[in-house]
Image 1: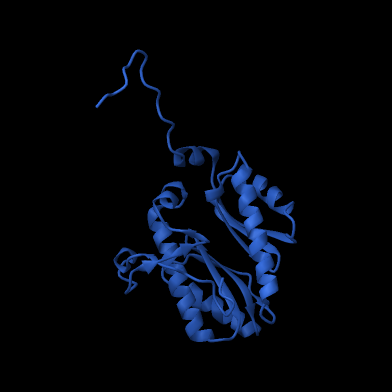
Image 2: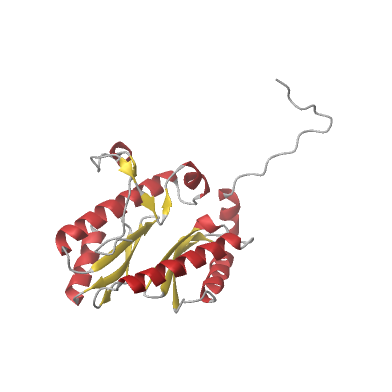
Length: 219
């Protein structure tokens, strides 16, 4: 996260893949994890939604910067075309302005505006938020009954926001885990709830064992 205005976005897909809406081809970090083959495989969004989320974050951040200038500290996170706005702005009018700007970005379906009208958070506060997010990601990774890549974690002013396409069981389990994390004061859930049957369809099929008596292939 940049200490001046916006979190850093590093683009990893070409403009042609973003339906001609971008004019350059540079790497992009999505929710703290670089886009790549592994992410595409394990992410529960379609590959098209992942690309659109990258474009939303890039275009939305650019438009906010153009309109807001140095006023405020705004973070924009997009998951499955739903945008979460966190950070600080100086006035209620600026909070509304940012939401209006983002709602007009191509492919955005909804905006969750969690901006706070306050002075910008300082480096100590942002460092604490980063540590909290790191702890949560480590706990999600260690939880044997959860898929850590199904969750996007954002922490702002000790409030943790959880995004993802998850079942009700996964949502409740992750929420309880996050609430017990040191430093977390509040948990806000922005989930797309799916059924257990839909989850089963999203998961890769287990490899079938070779038939009895089959000989291993040799070169």
